[in-house]
Every structure is written in structure tokens, then in C-alpha cells.
Length: 202
Ligand SMILES: [Ca+2]
Ligand SMILES: [Ca+2]
Image (tube, rainbow, N blue to C red; front, top):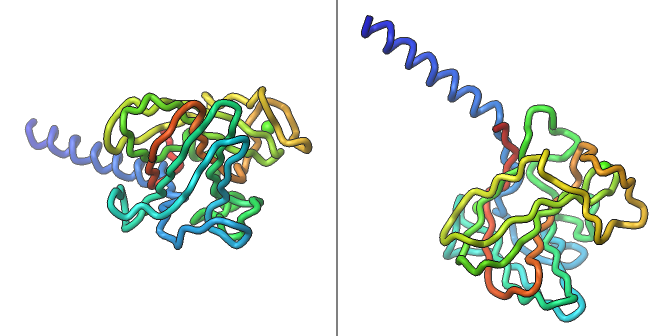
């Protein structure tokens, strides 16, 4: 009987491991030269009085040798964006995998690690879908150290404050996703680190 239980436990853990491998795809690890501008690897900027700078985080890292370090000052009425993906103004901001090469049916959430400082800052995580529509998942910096932020696709809401003019505004996620962006929301100021962005199946 004991042997049977052991075999079952081993079999289940093996199945569990293979499920995990199937349901996880790392799309971004920030192990590149971090730069802005038209030839950059990160499409970032700020306006209306807000400020952002994006560099490689080398002291605070979750995986590999670098994280994405975001120094920011988000003022009322201002905006900030820190984007990675395809069809952005920064030519070299693409993920590790092309959106069109991903079988999106295999995943139901996008997740990343953030190094929090319990600043209570509200942060938006926006995705731009295949119709150019921007969908948002918002969360709060209410922890310290690294934490995985899981954003289930079903919890994304189309932004109602702004959409690109040419967006197909249907309120649904149209795959493949083209890009994502981090946006600290005003009023808030500080430094955030991000690392290891992946698609997962919960
Ligand atoms: Ca990394
Ligand atoms: Ca859509």
C-alpha cells in the first residue's frame, strides 16, 4: 500500500511539473542593453510635468544579471509610459518571442516580478491588443521586495480615459498582444524594479 501511494505521489508530481513547463512562457527578462529613443530597447517617456528614466537595475535583480529600473515622478495631470513589445516607436523593444509566434490559447494570465517599497503608489499595467486597443490591469505597491504580480486576462478592462485614434474599441482582448507598458499613476514618486515577465496558465 505504501509503495502504491509513493508511486501515485511521484506520478502526480511528475504530471504537475510537466503541466508547469507547458503553461509558462518567459517573454521578457531585460537582459539587454537598456536604452530609449528610436533605436532603443525600451519605449519610455513622460509628459505634462511628469518624469521618468529607465535604466538597467544591477543591484536589485530577480533573474539573470539585470532588471528594469524605473525612476519616476508622476504628477497630477501628467503621464508616464514604459513599454516593451512590437510596433512601438523604439525599434528594438521586442520581447524574447514574437507575439504572432505565441499560442495565446495556452495561457490565461501575464505575470511579472516587481520589487516594491510599500510606497502605496498605484501602477497600471496596460496591454495593446491586435486591434490597437489598450486594456488595463491596475495594482498597488503595497509590499516590500520582490513579488510576482499576476494579471489574469479576464481582469483586464479597456481603458475608458484614452485610446489610440485608430484602435478597434470592442472591449475585448484581440490576440496576439502587441506590447505592454508599466505606468506609475499620479501622484507618486520613487523607484520601481521589474523583472521576468511571463505568460502563465493558472
Ligand atoms: Ca533579468
Ligand atoms: Ca480589442
